[in-house]
Length: 327
Image (tube, rainbow, N blue to C red; front, side, top):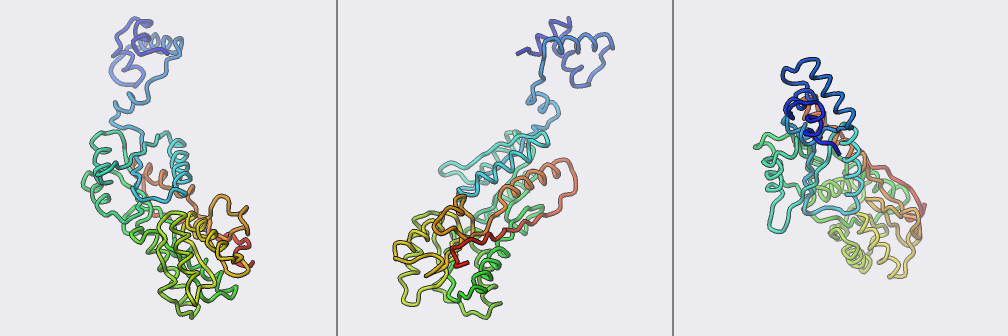
């Protein structure tokens, strides 16, 4: 691969002159400019993206602070959306996560001081206000996913999704509806609980605190939480599992108790697993717009870097009805 020095030798000029010509800076005669461009074309020279970005004091790179606590099922789709949204506008994506004993705020500070990124996407899973304040203090363009009080933001309306899920069960005649939640420190848990309570109140159904349980973010957590619910004397007749791993664990617990999902008890996933349509029975679930979230986060951050107007964006889950709720 040809270098800037190769072009300089071929054109009979200094490397700095080649740089002036290719970047449109400095004072270069028309004849010299022609020689440089002809030499660059003959050598198939491709300017370094990194070098040109540094000259403009811009990296053309977006940073993504990966939370320590995250839902693994969602991250592939979110990152795919971020990558596609970034590359479509000439930006790259740099992922950075905290190591043992390191805070996410420290990761953000490192990104800024390294000058490797022009802005950062922060997906707020656990409500870490320290990270957001760190971005403000460092005057870094920052876009949050999942915080309504930080602007600009791109959010999934998890409360509205849970309202729709509960309403679907109520319409089908279920009254004792349990919710297995993700870790309680996650913003998602608070939003889903608000939607759960609002929908039951709207339906005039008294809810039992014993039916609102934390399952963590694993299949085992979902299994254990579901077994506890199903072992109650007045057990629920429907279970909503907030995350895909929780839904897997819940279905296994239902089967182990000798129950048939969709006949003896309803099971609904608050986050659709990829194999939902092929489960036994096919699983009714909320399809989360994770890819669209990632793509919109990239677009919003790039707009902010360019000094453009950046309105907030809200995305909504879609209820996919199958057979696990007796449909």
